[in-house]
Length: 91
Image (cartoon, rainbow, N blue to C red; front, side):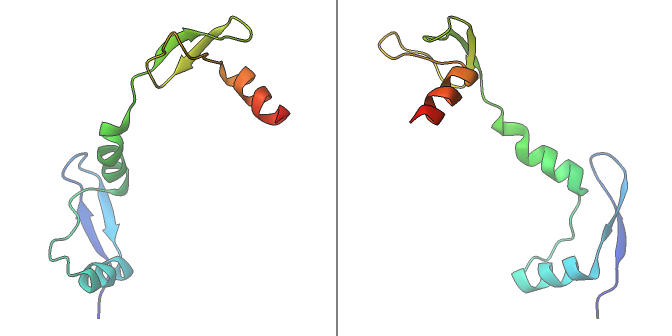
């Protein structure tokens, strides 16, 4: 019933294949529009808003620099990746 189709990505202009299986999946889900972006551009668009701001702090164990995805507070110790992993393995 379905046949593979070659489509052109609206972001990068590359050709990509909209397979018969993907078409069947789209039909089962009730999607009426064909995909407009290739997989790489869809993934890039999906992940665009997910980058986290990183903060720098001093490791409470070794005194080295620690990159962390949250604002450090003075009342809580912060550990670098190595010291944190070592603490977790000692438990």
